[in-house]
Image 1: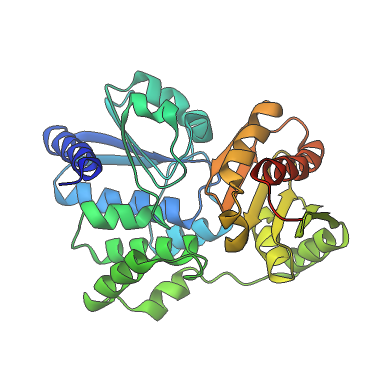
Image 2 (image 1 turned 60 degrees about the vertical axis):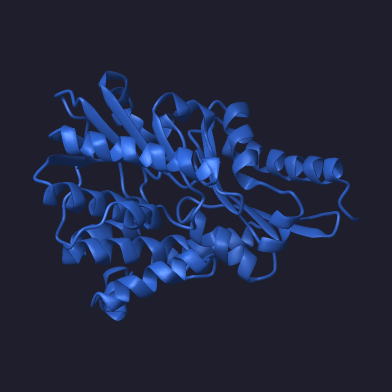
Length: 324
């Protein structure tokens, strides 16, 4: 049997053992949490509640679509610091502890820390009980190992999958198998889509158009890189830049950068998680994510970092000897 599989199974068995033995849990995810993060948190909460556990959930902030999901599922997430200490902390969909914001101290005080994540591996997380699997969404890991019969559980999982795969643009065979299994259990796909529906208001349209107006275009080797600035909606703009022809996009907000790349770019050795990690270090912030979608935040100078992003792409292509 594959040794890698045995190690992973051993970690899951250890996590399940803690879930069985302990009674009080705090589930956390990264600040500005997206739908996959929130869907994973809520789904794991339903799983633990079915085991009669006491569960609190928290994160520093949610993005707009995650807030819509939480409201439509009639759930609540605590955005503020817990004053009491939790012996058992579970961290989901979070590539570094800094991304927990005000909840970072809860990790330092906990007796048991479990991390379940699908981003690029973080060696600093390996000091804890850390399960990492590079599936397209974190929700798929929760569904794979921690099942629940709660109706909201299936909706939360499916919402997370839909959002983090870009409505299946980045899905793989495992993703479709998971979705099919959920639908067979009676979950209404259209209803879940409605839980995520966000009307594009006038202010958002104007903001995105302004970002396009500020766009700068760079040609590196045979790739087109687009950069721009915006006060909000960085990830939306980053995706939109790919839709209109860019191979790689970097979008700066006030203190953060969101980046996206097409699949063919990743095959050429570009890893946006690696680039965002380096940007975070250079600008005294924090960065990480996936090879094709990553971000950095708490940056001292996000606009300056945009130019560095382009240089880092060129550096990597030069190193790989990519065609010009």
